[in-house]
Length: 581
Image (cartoon, rainbow, N blue to C red; front, side):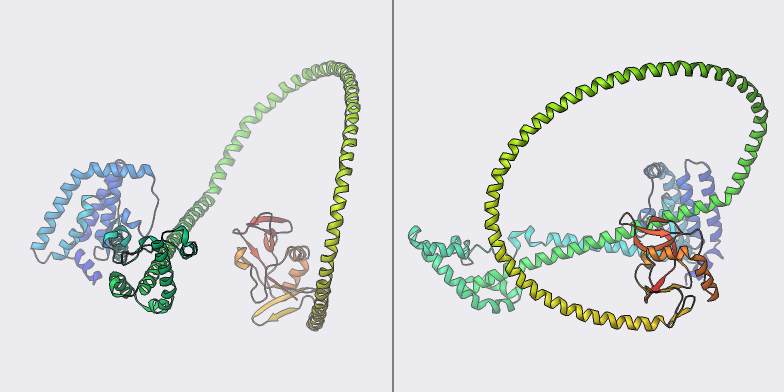
């Protein structure tokens, strides 16, 4: 239907001429530089007029609801300034479009054109930051805005009807520490321990207070018989009981008030959990949007790199021509400069010999003075050392005396500790003996299992030799090592990707360890020969292969092309999976 209306818009109503007119105006305004934002808006209007019934014009702010984009502060400020300056012209343009729309509607047959101008009217009045999008995108924006409006409306109603914000209108407002019947307000605030304390020491308190506390304890003890019945009641029934305390027993009223407080606490916790879940969901969406922006930046950098790669040969050719021209021009100057430098070198050499002779004489005199200063310094340090050793010896004697006294006290304490330790050691010995018996039994079972596994492994290894094709269901590989350590099988082809994607085993296939990767690199020719014989892809030279080992930092893993390096595991390298038996 939309396609038919688009065709009707162009023929016979010549809508493409209107689109062409706005495109020409957009070019003119963009050439002025100053009105560049308005020109871009006219281009969007022209694009909309090409298919007005299957697209829509939305503001960039609305488009950010489903496709966030970044715009510099300078560009936003300039667009705002141009929008303000364009308002008088926008009013005139919108008035012209409005009269055209009214004329189309009055003609009856031109109603489709009137609908187009009605949809275009806001953009004609203010074309800055308008974007032409498919109709489905516009509907999605309206849906998101409607959802935000409904959420805001619900949040407003929740806040207006929140019982905590209007305590006078809350039908559930019954405080735990206040008696429903208006009596014993003071004792209802006490917990059971306080009530028992008052009853136990009755002589210390007023008789009426003690009697009320004793009566309150009886009410609380009897209220336990109503707990199951009250738990089965709904909130409306509990509110009815609490609202008419004169009709029910005090035990039932107390049980209902406790259940009411507990349900309020559970509802509060549920609301907090829902709020936390909503916050986590918002954070997850924000993280996904950030990752998408980073991906777009990465793709843009790759496109720039490809463009530079295409232009690089021409740039290098121009540089080479300039370098050769510079060499030709500088050749003659270099020849003349060499003759001049030769004469200067001869004179400089004679001057250097004379300076070296003077420097040697000065060095000898300085060394003699330095040797005299060194001998004097060594004599002074020797005297200081002797004095320090004497003082240290005196401190050592005093410390040995104090240490001997501490040793005697420690030996006495150690003897007492030794006796206690002997008792504990005997208990540990008995436990260790029991543990040793259990360990020997477990080790015997483990050796039996190991022997059975070794026999099965030997039977399997006897079926293969190096260079044989290994087939495991749909997976194939080549045996590259067969020795006492077992059998190592390498995959038939390479893969290319980041480290985490191939870390886990896949049907027994895994990343090679550093030692296995070193073995593959050092025996590359033999392994490539085996792969050629079995129609597999060969090990590449000069590229890095991932290993299963970690690097020097937590986010780095070992890669090798014959020489090991640590690389961030998000980088991409070649991968050749292996399987060992």
